[in-house]
Structure formats: C-alpha cells, structure tokens
Amino acid sequence: MGIPVYIVSLRRDIDRRAKIAADLTRIGVEFIFFDAVDAKDECNLQTLGAMKSSGDGGSMTNGELACTLSHQHIYQKMVTQEIEWAIILEDDVVVDNRFKSLWMSLNQGEYKKLSHDKLYLLGGQKGLHEYPVLATSIISKLKVGEIDFRRINYNINKIRRTCCYLLSNSMAKDLLALTESYGTYRADSWKIMYNRGVIKDFYLSEIISHPIVNDFNSHLESERSLISVKKVKRTKFQKTMKLLRSWIKVGFFSLLR
Image (cartoon, rainbow, N blue to C red; front, side):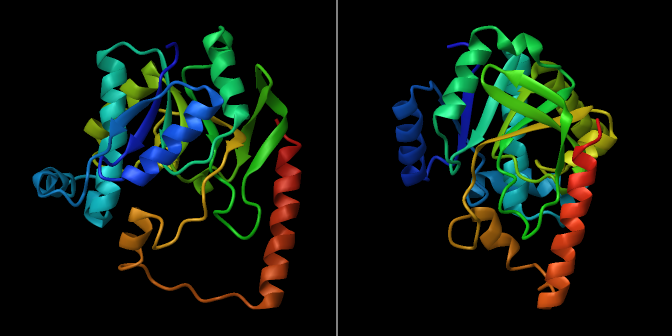
C-alpha cells in the first residue's frame, strides 16, 4: 500500500464514510478507516473526563477532547507499527486527482524529499476567515511530483484544523511525548507544537478543501456554539480596512524566505 491514508471517522457517520470512500475509490487512492473516539459514547466519558485535568483540557469540549484522542491513537499506531510517514484525513474533506497525484508521487520515492520535523498541510485553510491571514513564501518551496508546497512564514498561530495533513513517525513520537510533558491540548493547537519545538516549519498546498463548517455539518461546531461568546460585527468600513491591511501583510511576508 505504501504510505497509508487514514480516514478519521466516527463509526456511526455512515453517510460521511460512504461519500469519502466513494470519492477516494473513484480517484484510485487506497485508504483505511480509523474509528474516531465518540464523545457521545458513555464508555468514553471517563477517559475524556480524565483529560480535563491537565494542560488545556479544562477548557475543551468533549468533542475536542475526543478529536485530540482520535489523532493521538493514530500517532500511537504509527509508532507501534513503525510507519515512517502517514496521511491523515477527516471524513468531510473534498479530494480530487491532485491528491492522487501527491499520493502516487510519495509512493514512488518522492517522500525522500520530506523533512521529518516539518508538517505538511494538504489544505483545509480556505474559508476560515473573511480575509487572507496566512502568507506562504514564494521562495521556500518544495515540489513533490506535480504538487507545490510553500512554507508558511506569517501568522502560524492562525493555522487551524486537522482535516488533512502528512506527518512523519518521529513527529508522531514527539506529539505523544508532548502530551506527557504539556498535558492535554487541542488536536489543531499547531502553535503549541511549534513553540515546543515539535514542528520546525509548516508547508502548505491547498489541494484538499473542507466545507464551510456550521452547527449542522460539524459535530465540534454544534458543541462549541453552545459555549461561545458572540463577536461584535465589524462595520463595512472596518471590514474593508481589515481586508486591505491583511492583503498588504500577506503580500509582504510572501516575498520573504
């Protein structure tokens, strides 16, 4: 099979599983379903409750805790089975032939270009904000087959989601070790992992998309909406100025290495 593609999915999400399975089969990519920890399963409540006692666990919802644990179970599998590289997808992503191209190139030896201390994001960052936030370098690039990755060199703290990424065995080990030293953290707390030296750099290629999340299509969002504080809406002028400033910053930092 080569580099495994794990699909993190709740066993009860039958429709989602059917769709992503059909999409990946259509483009010819092999995959493995990895049963996510279900926050609504009473059998998991004790474990999730224990996670609240360390790190950021006290401020996390059960859904966030379950998401974190699901991804850590994959990291543990990578370490136990000595899997050198793995691609992790969540079951609501949208894939096309670009992903197949990347997967095939990696399996043909292109993975040797990758660095074990870098995280490779396969997309999922679009639609998170109404304005551009991430600057990717036009200088520091990596070509894997026909797919271009660019180094994120501005606003690392704005990187979100765990919907599609590629990581190494050594990083999986370090992420598990981080849980021991730091305690519980959100699965997409990439800034913490970066600040703690687990991730040296982030490289992004927007070849996989993620639907705009809301209370109806996301288990986490429906849970978060119950405890979130409503933000004050910006005026039209404020939105325009924010957009302008963002484009200037992103444009400037994209010129840097």
